Length: 69
Length: 450
Image (cartoon, rainbow over the protein chains, first blue to last red):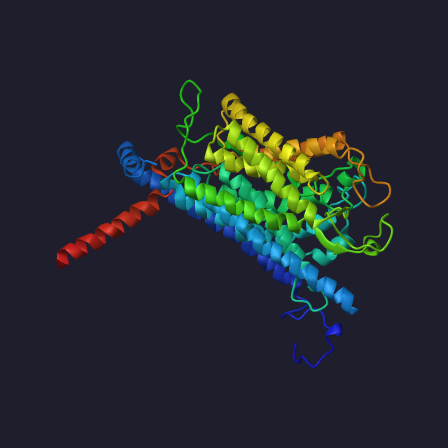
């Protein structure tokens, strides 16, 4: 939009990049899928590390004593 | 907005739905409080983040495809007609009406009202799977129910022209089935694959009670869900519409509130019936659980959920009794399924939403037998068989089965459940460990300064 000196009855979409909706949606979908991929990788790595570092019986028993309920 | 009356109606309707969205936000606040209160201290943060992050994920996917599904799928497709691409086009993410658009002021508000239902559906599942599910797995399941399965059921059974309404006479005014039964069925499908929390069942098969660590948080959470439910009920209505706009068989010029099927009701009716079904549920919940606060509050919720299918038309006493009956069924079914199949539903979501919602649909089929399901000619009347088939579609076909399949796939990739050691240590172990180290560090520093 370059001016508001218009009859609003004749105005439709006013957001930037009207006409490029498909590209914007494709970018949004790609970002959504990417988010899941990154999140699952992060979660896997954290769980693996926790298991490796603290997954022994002694550490688990200590954790249960520290935070029983 | 042609004339002043239509402009006022549009502005009123727009604001009406906008207010319902704000009130419905409290449902999510309530679910978060409830879940965190029910979890053990070593799982708080994981529990909270699991439920919180479904908000953005369901929101963006509901924008990308969920809202389009609702408008495209009322015919099945191929049950009563084709995919409705033309009707769905203004609601597609690439439509100009989904952005800031001065010639369409209301689509976004409708979208948001439906979106809040989507959050609720996913959030119901969230509570039942706490303390052992991986966040990433839950969020995929949340997108499945929030932006795919529930909105397919809405297109089928919660759209004025949905095929279930046309052929079965399906009637579910305030979503006993389209939200609650499907969410309960989905939760059960996940739970069957996920398995119980470690230590939940003794070697002889009897259950250990995992006591909610904070009953206040649980009960205030449920109070907030009740509060948000007001917005949910209001959002299920069309607040004011003329017979001419409906275009059905209603004669005369009297404007009315309607259900989503465009059948007449009143805000007064649903307000009284909401409270009477809540009361019936609370009273039975208290008695059947012998005063257990968790089940009393959950009973109130189950009462509303059971009566919701027909609360547009019931007499208040009917709403109260139906609410009580549904609560009794939910309570008994919860413990029967738990003992028989060793299903660990941490918050009773399958019972309160699934069994109560299922029962509510069946009961509505009998209670409203012969009522027109629609103002349009040629639609089947409400009947017990149609609503029972509808309940099966909601709970099993669109709820249990897709959730079971997706959970099996996630489990096959080792992505469903956290490792055994982490579950025992607590899902917040890393955070708690780092926090303790930080405190220790500060203590040491302060001692050095003393």
